Length: 146
Image (tube, rainbow, N blue to C red; front, side, top):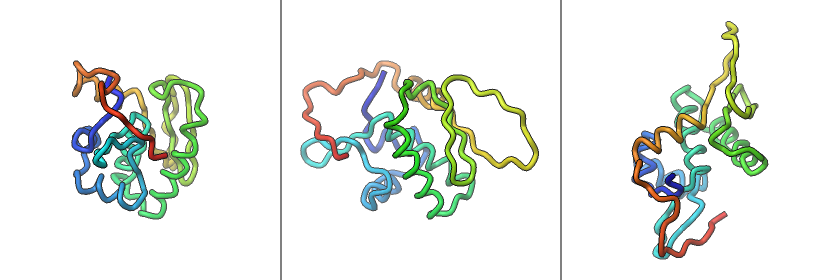
């Protein structure tokens, strides 16, 4: 499975422009976890989740302030998760993010405004786009930008 993604690969997977990715990096909104020599950026699966959630929230007309607040909460939450990320489902309602492990079955209740994000579908999309990908980038020195 592919573990590192270039900004151009991220743009394709998340369906946002390369310029948007650059802007989010420059403004410290969502930055890549690794940089190779020469400032070449590499995004991790965790970074990709944040970008995809941000894109999903933008599609649901979240304000910029609310979007930033939600992504900061997600960034704080991800390192605390003990389960593999691919098994997670996020339910985002207002300023709350609920994290579930495994399948989530819910009734559709009128008036409930939540956004559901299944990480498994993101991994499946990655595997479709990069079936031959290796999980490591051989021979490249990377430095965490954390």
